[in-house]
Image (tube, rainbow, N blue to C red; front, side, top):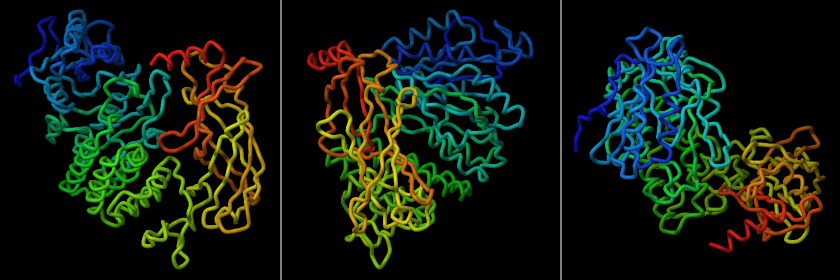
Length: 559
């Protein structure tokens, strides 16, 4: 394989760019042009529209280096065509595919001439002003690393979900990595600007070859060097999520247990990097992050996998968690901590429905609620797993379960049951429940339905019930006109007699989770499908009008 990669013949590139943006691509001819153009569109203060940068005609504000990782679909040709008309773009072609993202990023890093460098994947884009905002923060605070907000954009709906929003609510400067241990929760490498001299001085590169989750390791190497880091609330990266794509991205392609094995290995490597650097606090923070984020994400999907996957996943997880110390477990949030304790206590997969619901966000602890010597425990046959903190948590942080059962017959009837939790809700006396709907693609708020709660019985854990009739027609008003039904998410707020209250997602239950056609005065007909999300929450898909219903039915019949 040719290791020394040369730029394409073409316009001469002036050296000494302020910022180099490295774009990596493999068989992504459809999207790579958008990625490169979003990088070329970045402007710096005082940068002329044509060649030259803020320091004069001998410099270039932004240069883009695209690395084609031996694509076979026309990606290379698409990049070459762009390079022939854009002097700030260089294209490097690899002779053999590297099998990962680390090697092409390292190739681009070696070819970069800028004082700072950024990374961009071929199926994502940089929003306008991203480089300007990051560079301004790096220069103002004289830091070698600046990081900004990233959004996961669900396509084709274009629904934006903030990534690790708590880290980027306001501008801040972390004087040393140890004082900003929460930064380990953001393992992305693409929403950050790095000073090349800092990376070179500490020998920081990506893992080479077929190494999945290479950004975990790269980020750990950066943080282990204890740089000062500036964080800004500006949106600097748009991470496109295409769940219906024929070939899923690494972050979405989790159906094979090898993906989990690779994630564990990347995390184990990252923790060791912190330990070798003497960064004990960072190592502990990374372990906590694994429990709170990685473990919960995969547990939410575990019930959808086959028996062989579950058995191997359980074995791998149990083996890895056995190396975690008690401090790391206690530092994790209660849902993740309880999930980890169940995996460690049981040699084989068990309680998958309860674990799935507990790993949801927010977590829901399903009945039965067992006790041992007056202490809340996971179950009677695993009495050693104490559910600590339940007695001291405020009401709004308890993993309360609210069942929602759509009626098999009737127009939008929803039967609700609020489960008590070791007597904590009974103390507050729940009185009413508000069911709120929000359209997923744009977070538009739908109607709110209120009902009184009635005690379901007098025994321990009996709970409370209510019934609401959803205004389905209101959900169809202002729709997009798409042939695809609109997804709506449901949440509930319970108000109590003592003035307290809490919010919770609704757990989808019962035989009413099926598609149905309802008559409507406003829309002639409505197509409604209550369904359970991967985490078990209740959502609705709604389409309106005879044309939309007919198109959906015809497409399904044609499959």
